[in-house]
Image (cartoon, rainbow, N blue to C red; front, side):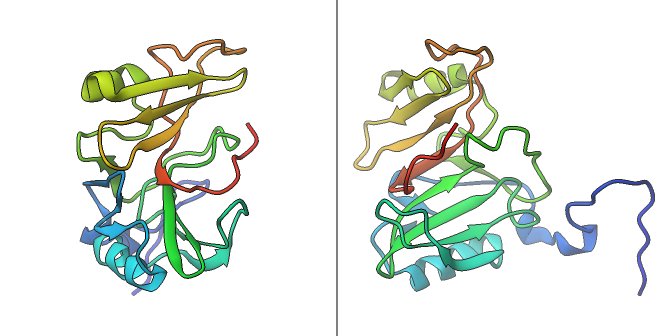
Length: 192
């Protein structure tokens, strides 16, 4: 069978690659882990659990980012609409991050499952939505280049970055979008 695609430009994933497993929204991001894979469990076991939910990873056992991370496994389009990186150290999961690092502004969402927290928070939502979903458990921090948020009130907090709509950012504004969602150790902070 030969398939032709009209138009021009990059095609992130041919339609026949994105099966039912890789569509829709999945509420699988928690402070304890992702898709039933818990921070602290063996990397092999965690990767199997996440693979059952999302399909195979694009990259496995890639070199880590340092700062307590020695390996990373990445799911990306067509499995997930935005990159999901699971971080490991010494054969155990130490954390995860959903979304591209804040220094990769301009990455476009591809086809694949959109991942959310149990309360429905996902990437590109304004921080005001996070505040509404998590009420008093959301704390925001600002820096000159980007903001950071923490969701507390559970045994393991969820954290991530917020991209400012205006520079220089002196505070996180209500309309600033969520850039990443993660938990645990995500290695060295990326330059913004």
